[in-house]
Image 1 (cartoon, helix red, strand yellow):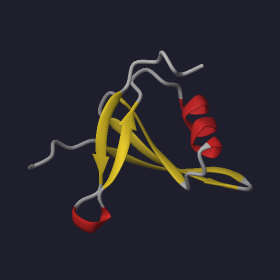
Image 2 (cartoon, one colour; image 1 turned 90 degrees about the vertical axis):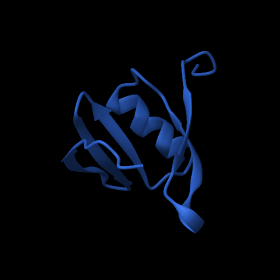
Image 3 (spheres, one colour; image 1 turned 45 degrees about the horizontal axis):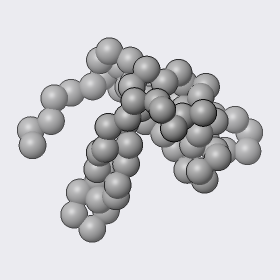
Image 4 (cartoon, rainbow, N blue to C red; image 1 turned 45 degrees about the vertical axis):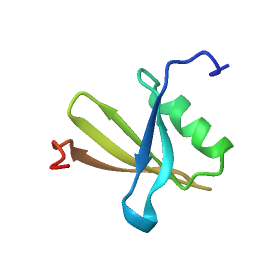
Length: 74
């Protein structure tokens, strides 16, 4: 299904906490959460415009922490 979906390679974290990641532009929140569940992720970062949410996944559903995106100094 997502084999042909446009994606961008990314790195999440820094130093010893850095891990390969992927950005899937245009993906809806429900599909992003479903994919995270499928791949055993505890959370997914989801954004639209300058708004971003850390979406925590658990047995009871999802919990959102909302933030405004900020430009990185790196």
